[in-house]
Image 1 (cartoon, helix red, strand yellow):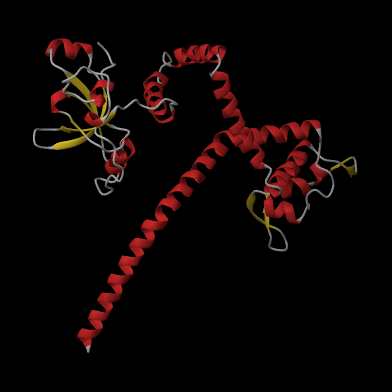
Image 2 (cartoon, helix red, strand yellow; image 1 turned 180 degrees about the horizontal axis):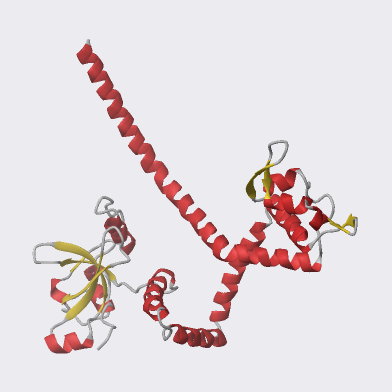
Length: 310
């Protein structure tokens, strides 16, 4: 009887583990995508949107004055949407910074008459923005600001201005040690023209007998080509699981094996550590039509990669 119970428990644990891992594999990509979107929203809102929102509140305080009566409840909304403090009132309610400012006599009365001081006016607008989620306006304006910066940099004046700013940055102490490296990463991730890979190849790396998946990038450096005096090609070997980094090797063209898979499938294969196998079938370069002379041993893939430095 005890043995049957142990077998049953093991079967349950095995089934639970199997279905849990399956469910995790199904949900994890969606959860990670949502987490990245939330992180991006918080990044933009924290570093740009909140400053725009504060600017809008300051402009409204200076140009409009307090919000219209009835826009916010001075009791409930001030306690619900304000910034909490460590103080409690006689009813045991946790007070907020805005509540204390709104109801303080020095900010609500002047010469015995109703009055709203600049601090009280700002507190009222802060409660209004929090209640009606108007902080999203700052986020949307931040997105618009980024768009217009990109639009401006697309012009001749914008490019010239930005080159002047960058020239100052790369000569500024401390910043010059950080900015160029960060720029290299952002240029790689966000540039409009992606790396012009000619195709997917296999090369022996890091030693003979060990084959690595690589992306054919072009012809080698002119100095290498002139020194070796052999037909060479340059191959980028992406790292796993981060294919944005890797190694660049220069190998004889004859040692490169051209593969009939797409670049996207090669990247997925690298990111997954070899778990995700290529699904697409592409014609091998030697099967592609080309305008080269008869009897040419290299395929069109290698020919497409020969437009680099001489």
